Image 1 (cartoon, protein in one colour):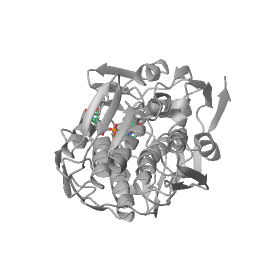
Image 2 (cartoon, protein in one colour; image 1 turned 30 degrees about the vertical axis):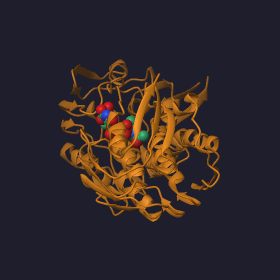
Image 3 (cartoon, helix red, strand yellow; image 1 turned 60 degrees about the horizontal axis):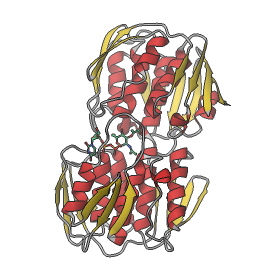
Length: 417
Ligand code: EPU
């Protein structure tokens, strides 16, 4: 077990270089097995979710290397085997293998995926997409057995713009006969990254990044090279750190447009930022104004930044509100923030944050990835020492977190307990 110890209150100065996006990389890696030849993916973050996907690739018989952020995957010797539950339940993204194996072999057996416990997280829209494309889905004790005599393009309307269902449908449709149209598709930048990767392999996808994606299936996909986009959630997390404690803190190697829903809110709060082509320089905001926020699919305010931004809202001068519309259980950070001195009420799907409040060091728990990020931000700004347990959740998603924060002046260390 690992925990983090933080001494709060230090100014953050210098540069943080953002890594490749977790939520892109975890889809690109399973997508690679659709290729008949070697693929290379650059800017792969060194995080534990990636090790879990490697384990699945190697279990299936792929040859994988990861050197200097470049992952090389040779899928030529892959066998279509049932991935053991212990491996697939480590992360949500294991279900991208479900789609990739179905697309390639027209048969797959796999368990329900894992992931942070932030809500029910059903996969009905993914399964609906598979069925519309000609697959038959059987479920026995949380295991899915999915077969298709033939995969044939179809018209898939998603009940909600699900990131996972959009990507899974694109993966299968790339190998189905004829045209698939996804309506009400998710528009996240990670979807554009995956569509570009598939197109580099020879797929024919248009409209990724809009709510209607068209995919003309092809028989074969070939080797290619691609790059993971910068992580917009890591970017947002460090931007928030800058608004709390920055002195010309530079967040570098980013796509500013991907975090506009955050930066425009920070402008409303009165935060001082210099936004360049691929960086943002940010300073601590002495007296931020309160704001109202609501999570939505891209380009709305991302649910994955909802918990991190809550720490900043505790410093706003007045009452802020935040509504979570994507997950049922994403306020597990709130009781811990209150223990540290915050004044937050949970009212159904909303929280009401009264500020400004001083935060004090405490012993708290990272219940999930972004709750942990929220508590790290709180610890950085708090008076005294904070210990955050169950930090493994956070290490799943933030590359070199300790080094990046230490390099800009934070007092933070990782301990084995
Ligand atoms: N939903 C359904 N049925 C489905 C699919 C989704 O009801 O078949 C619901 C979910 O229960 C949820 C909402 O729709 O309430 C959104 O789910 P979505 O499918 O968009 O999310 P996901 O693909 O499971 C990815 C990220 C999440 C991120 C969401 C939303 C990965 C591996 N995960 O999840 O990231 O919150 O999109 O942007 O890409 C994180 O990084 O901390 C994280 C949880």
